[in-house]
Length: 177
Ligand code: PRP
Image 1 (cartoon, protein in one colour):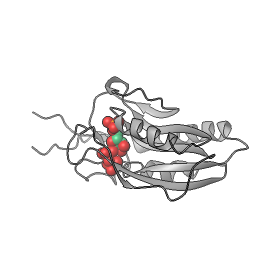
Image 2 (cartoon, rainbow, N blue to C red; image 1 turned 135 degrees about the horizontal axis):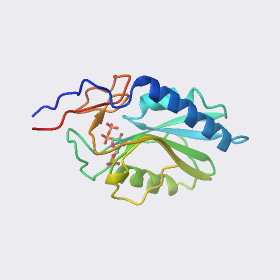
Image 3 (cartoon, protein in one colour; image 1 turned 90 degrees about the vertical axis):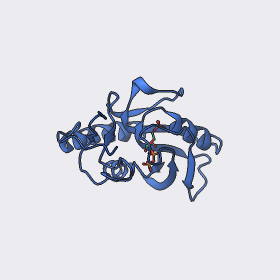
């Protein structure tokens, strides 16, 4: 059955934008004097990535890594597929991965293993949302926007069956009855 969008935002637009400024300030401090390859994980991270990198003051290049594991399901299949790879080698570079959400952590685990094999100088992760209660893989997230519970969230890049990505806030789907 189709799940409806709850009318009340879980995280309003203003809170997201305020948190983005705080994370960007932390990244600017941590990477001072260095440059970085900013990797946007498609599709879900595209809006977070665009908003955040506009506040990063160190020199950066942008790369896009397309991955998918959920399809039309609300629970991960656990099988991650690469739909688009990076265009440049990252060996010896400082790589910062931007995710919209770390849920089971299986996607991030796959990302970290894949990118680590390419021997970057450093590899860190920035995720807008993190569900600590649902981790199924031992992954570390260096910069976290918001820790959330078990809600199925949509908007601000995140989808449900490809819908809702354009919402300017994080909303949640009503639970199934
Ligand atoms: C979502 C999200 C993360 C991943 C997190 O991607 O963008 O990459 O799931 O879930 P996990 O921690 O349980 O692995 P999805 O596969 O839905 O693709 P999309 O970004 O194209 O929507």
